[in-house]
Length: 366
Image 1 (cartoon, one colour):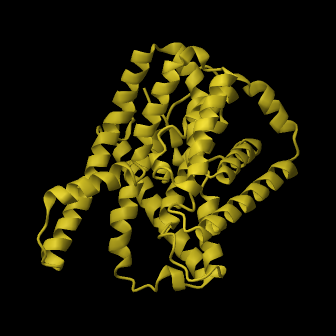
Image 2 (image 1 turned 120 degrees about the vertical axis):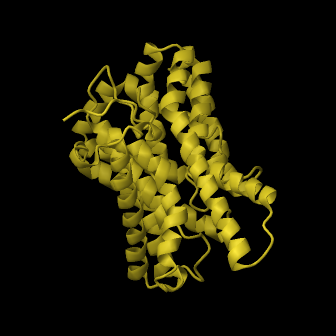
Image 3 (image 1 turned 30 degrees about the vertical axis):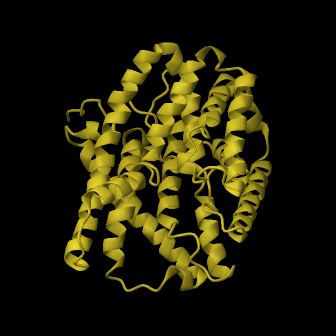
């Protein structure tokens, strides 16, 4: 049994899923690698826009993953009882997540202890640091995704008989839009990683895409490329404009995934990727084997590896870099994180410990 991002559809052959999951994971790694803080610029100059465009271009991955997971749910819900489904999820998804999230937590705390005791010669408070690091790991990093996903799955399992009900979809959409509006008013903590009920709608929407896929695919194939490209560019522009407005409001999360414009941008990106179809990425990247492992490990590289590399390069503040230099710097960060993580995952996949990245199938003998 594979995990949510490695699931292989059994009933039909959806060849586009592997390529899209590969690109979506690249976008998530890029998003996390590109970001170096929100309010690092003194003005809305060329550097700001280069920074913002790169981050926004990479912002479709999270919603796309929920769409794909929902797309595959129809077959899974039909094959297994709720108990069987959650049990298999625990083995292939939750156990590896526990391992790597704890690795991340320990790595942060060890680094904090060394900095406190050896560098600053200050007392180290284990309890205070533990509470702070738990928040960093499970609310502020990518490790929120699995908890959120399992809660979303649990909600859909509760309403399994209404899975294809448009009334259920309307309620779930209302929950998502609440978080979209909350970005502005901040009735509750507005960071998208804490939006527990904000992503269930995209699972539900993915299930609807699965149910009506043959008709939808015909429409997509018959629609000119120009329409998809224009929709992509329009939603990208709107998403950038909304982020710019949120910066003016000093929002806590101006690039929030659940901005209405980013939802539209993510859907437009997904549609464009489906329209393009085969990217021929599966041969080398092997997304069914590597995607979940990259998800589990890459943020440790962003948080722990990158700072150790950059501290020796004596680079200027990103907010002061020229636009072109900043863009090169952002993509260099992405390439380092993605390639190191990919090679590490491929290495683990060649060992009997491949289960720690969600791959439970036996290694093929040569």
